[in-house]
Image 1: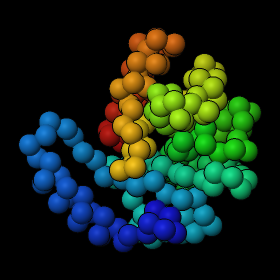
Image 2: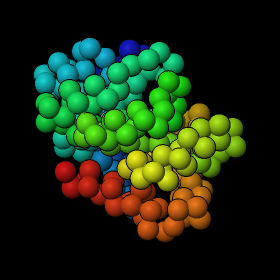
Image 3: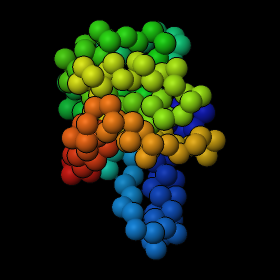
Length: 185
């Protein structure tokens, strides 16, 4: 949900149900949620029930401006006091965001997601060093595809990179176990 892609919640639910029906023969579980642009209206829209949380849980996936500074830790804090569990999406893409900022997000109760492409796709590897430093410090909670029709799907390759560099246990946690916590609410 952002200024460019702001569909009504009911429309998203309808499209999701249609998508699930079309994918019924594929052995995959699908769950509804949305990435939410962090703006001054976000909490008002959440409280009115106009935005989707992840799998109808308290988890919210938040996206911030890539280039213009935003107080991410402060926004995370404001989400937590409202009872949400905020996940900061593709944190490596925020030019102004550093390791100390990630530590502050975690202190405020936020979770951190990075993109698989930052680990696996050569054109995206400018973010890889930052991602590896965050994983090494134990600050990353999820590696996700952030897949769009214009991006290459790289989740399996990213999992192999994490297994090789940080071990199978870390990969299991970042790619599977933490996601299960969202699904289970």
